[in-house]
Image (cartoon, helix red, strand yellow):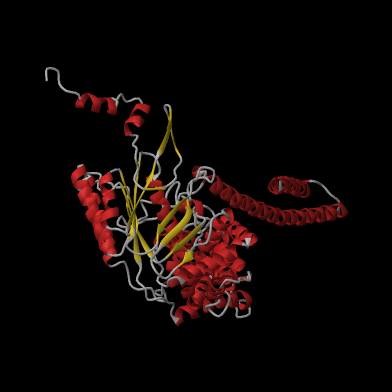
Length: 615
């Protein structure tokens, strides 16, 4: 309603502006062409002046209404994105394009990025540096300072979750950036941090002396006996020199002033953070970074904005080639930019990093606010993963089924068996996704979760490479070898506790690219080695031969399973994890369900066991 009212008012003001402008043009024509007596002409000029004043007022009011409408539209967009995240409307959410190393241990397998991903339901950022910082949180693994690093982000996200108005304003201000500009600050940062553009003292003197010379010639030329022609020639020469001199400064001015809209929006975003009274120590520290230059970052950026505003005057061709050249406008704007860069340029990246970190933390806060049933994980000094009612955060609330998962110490493994479509892969991805959220400092989709320093490593979505000559089986072997190597040296001890991080491995349908005899033997060998190195995790499989590990590694391996329920010809799943080994399978039943004619296995086994005729 507010947006519609503002847009209606803006249209009305635009119509009034047009009407006043046409009236002013008509009145100007009548003044020129109509025959007025002196008193009427005075009244006409006064009316024209009044129309001009009214037009200027309408322009200013229209600009304010237009800005207000844009802000309200940005607020609406903030709420629409939140609703889209809640409803899992993936096509309505932006898909972050984040370059990730192909060897990253888990990003591909547990849907960190892309459509229908963790990033999709978390990302509430509006700038590129905010989005990149959030991506780094989801990719980092175990923070260097454990558990203090993740706890500090938890506390900051809790603080921001209660500051809905602040998060709304921050996102709305960021949303005012043009789409093509919103995501990139590299060009401005490159300019702010370079130091290869120096101006000599002679150049600075010339920039002052030439305009002063032209002003003296115009003001005192006749006093010194110069003719009008001589004055004109001297001023023309000074303007020509000013054009040549100013042209040298144009490339630098163009590279910065083209991003003026960015600078304006950064200032308002940073000012919003500077004016907020945070409670969480991490947020207080981030706000403090905005005064690293001795002045507030918003004040420094406002100075840059003013300089760029003056520099943009050169886009008026008449001013640029005459008055601007005579005053060496480009040179003085360039000098002002260089002074700003010397004073504040080296701080700009730190300010934008702090802004990006606040945006990322606000995204974690939005996840907590939008999902009050999610919980904050308990972070422990030792590698452990114990959850109650653990669910997958990408599944809608009404369809999600929670399961208890217990990996209470290093060297513990769940072997998960079950029929097709029963939930084995979803459980593994739920474990991985929630571990990533917990390590980032976010709430998790569970009733409770205890987690220690764990590096997530997965082997789930295996891709062969025809170009690289890599088969599906060999690609999986490479992934398994990488996980085993990681379990041997998962990382340095955490700074605070001195305990070493562990590995949380998730292996889906392990070694399914070879025959069953070798698959079972190989899978058992892989699990034994991972257990020997203290890794913990889960393995899903259809091969019941792997379940003997529970007996071979007593106390280390726990067999669990999912199963289907069949009533008549109808097959359903409850997705509940149960102890023990699955006792049923549904492959042939599923084949029949999709229209593939397969024989009845029990009948065929009975026929094969019957004696041959004549025996």
